[in-house]
Image (tube, rainbow, N blue to C red):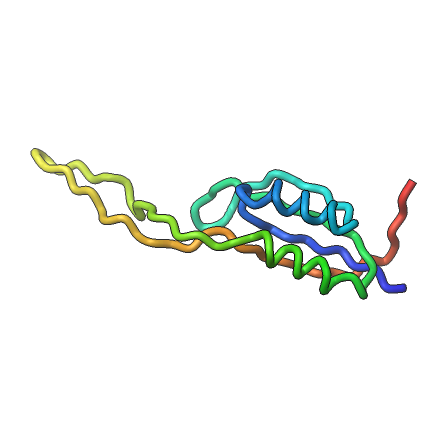
Length: 111
């Protein structure tokens, strides 16, 4: 039986919903609060150890619970010129969804 580790980096807004859905699907997971990405916002890294044949089930759960969103951000801070304030136009970016790594596990030990 081949063991795998799924490392899923998701938006923090989706973390509780995902971990609940994983638990209801019979999968154990560990959530780690992380920061990163283009906007340096809060993320969650979800770790799931499982048998290889269960990977499609977990990927389906992740897909159903992690969604992309549109967010507007200012690409640059406001610029002060003498007697003038320049406010850059907000830029539309996509946030959320999931980045998933599936890696081989040499050994899984549970006490």
